[in-house]
Image (tube, rainbow, N blue to C red; front, side):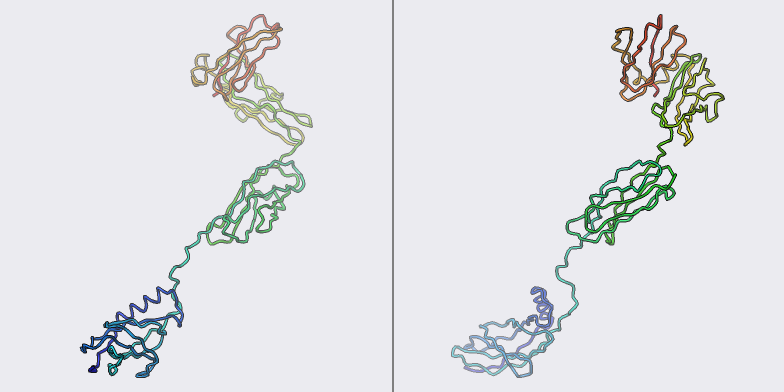
Length: 399
């Protein structure tokens, strides 16, 4: 067997690509990670050659490792350490195991591994879910009431995958009405309380805002509002307010309000915001109404503790036809189911459900008086028909 020296070289550009590809495939970035190099050589011209032995080590011509390869012209050497220079040589083998002299030597520097590369499969970004808080019902309390406690519920971080420490705060739109506002809550409970006390002798309305904050960079706040109304229990309470009315010119009509109170009540009627002299009763009768009497009527009901008001609009039309034309046809009422029994007379007023209608009565079909205002459908009952030799009824919508 003749011995021939082979020429051996490394493909630097290809090596770099392959070794980095190997790193990425193993997913390891430590200095101990396996590296590899591809070696390529010219084939032996000896016809007895059946393979090659590759020698390599960490010093020139000091080979501590070797591998056998077949009758090929390239191989990949693996298990190299990053940051190390390796030296390579090769011999040709025949069937008897005889080796040629070593080829020329080539070397390769295995690059050191970077230690601050980003992970190959970074975890998906997580979007913070806003915290939760159930709606809070509005409340009405009496003036000078003691401390009030309102329950809070449905408090969460917004997701079962989140466990932030939750903080709850509160504020009032009217500090002159609400004082000592405070929240009692321990994270991560789902319930808590808010307490407050009405300011002494104050009455009115305030909006309370409750805020839950989970401390996230975004989507971190949820708020709920509720209203606190503080009333004076001794103020007059209107049980039957005024309603809008429609009359024809020349008619008489009566506006009436019903109120209750623990103290004696007084009344003052107003027309378009101006007090009406001597109009200080629970009702106001307008006789022979003209167009100039159309407008806004209100009544202040008061006692020694304060007052409350009710208002309505009176419309005056020159004729009944004009009054009917001013109402919407769809709201035109119908009087049905007329019955008489034991001196009483009744009929049903129907039209648009929920709309208000006025029932008027007349003894001559000229002069009409409003006898009831109600929401359709309703039944009008005249309990004492014996008091009227004859009587006519009509109804119309206030809408």
